[in-house]
Length: 235
Image 1 (cartoon, rainbow, N blue to C red):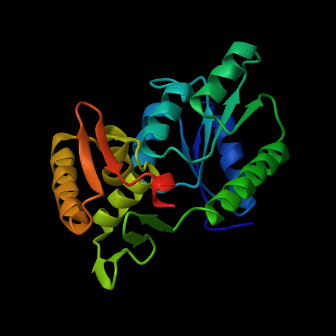
Image 2 (cartoon, rainbow, N blue to C red; image 1 turned 30 degrees about the vertical axis):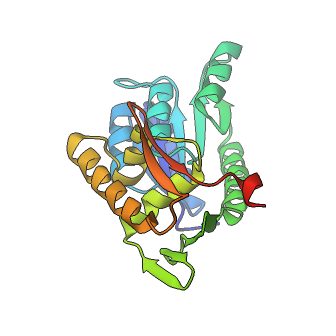
């Protein structure tokens, strides 16, 4: 069991929530409990979590709404829904939002931990295969070292520059939604963060000038696109 693993637990039933938190903590997890979706969202923005366990029916903000807001910030974090509902439509709605699993009440504590462990094994396997080196045009970008190379010249990027270029590379020749980039890197898509991102886009454009076949273009009202030579033409 990974004792450093942190769980966001949102459950409005006080007794059930406390039992779940105590059981998960006894199993070696770190679990933060919140009684409604609004408090859960505030906690997610402020803290770093490895997995979210969300009750569907909660006051102030339901689990489906909370999950959508969490997905806007982090598209990859695992989400498990807890619900008393058994309607097929509700289960399908949960999976459409991006649920990794769906547990119907009542359930055993052991079942929940087994499902958490199964999901985390899949996620870790996926992360181990994530790309750390991108090659586009004449450039090589090492995301771990935060180094952009062209020929014998290397440029050490700042953390924000590296995070933004990593996102652009992940969406190479596709639109990187402005809101997604802001919430992924800056957490909030307010005016000041948006202006900050514009500054970093300008900096990245300067770094990419040595290769005229590579550019970052604005997609009006949507976001940005990293344009690179067609791979088939390069071969």
